[in-house]
Image (cartoon, rainbow, N blue to C red; front, side, top):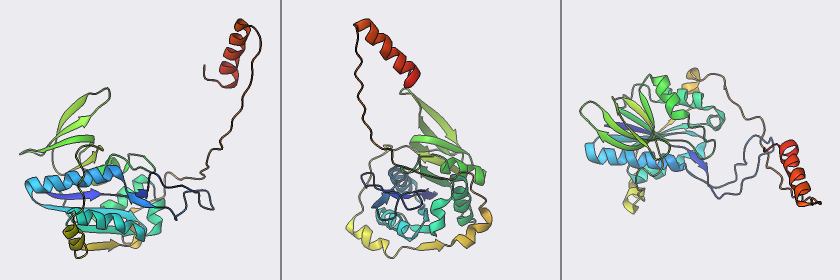
Length: 256
């Protein structure tokens, strides 16, 4: 199978986040890492390649620093990479990212595209399914098991309350992978060395500009909530205290 894996670079989970001067996103001087759900998508793609043969290609969209996640994927076993490189990709909404990704792989004829279920920064869980819509391919989400069949794929989906669903999907298809579907591998020393010589194609914004429209979603302002503490002592008999407390919960805090 020829498999495309969409991966994203996100701020590290324990990185101290500070807002930029415009208050629209965090500053650039933080540590970054591969989006965790995307790491599981990559691992599953590599396992499918090991079972059935084929090629694994990784793609990301973002500034020059995003190339690091592609290099890590190549070191783990991906065959080649595609980098939609421009700072402006970081400000596109999920629909336009999907359109840009689709334009960058025109003519590639992939059998399967996998993404993480959602990103650790925005958490929209939209790019994968929107990419399927742009391509006109069937898709399935929250995948925790993949089995290749003669007619396509047999998938196991995680539902709520400990329930699961098994579905059959023809190829080509787009899947969003749930974290924990497998055990992640580490890049070997020889894999790191080989990654330096593997193909990495850069795609400029101008090459996919015609596929991109106006953003339908935009972050206008972010803020860090201020921590406040206020203690109020309620006096009276037990019945009076209970009555005053219920009144405050209902009318002031509006939690009842």
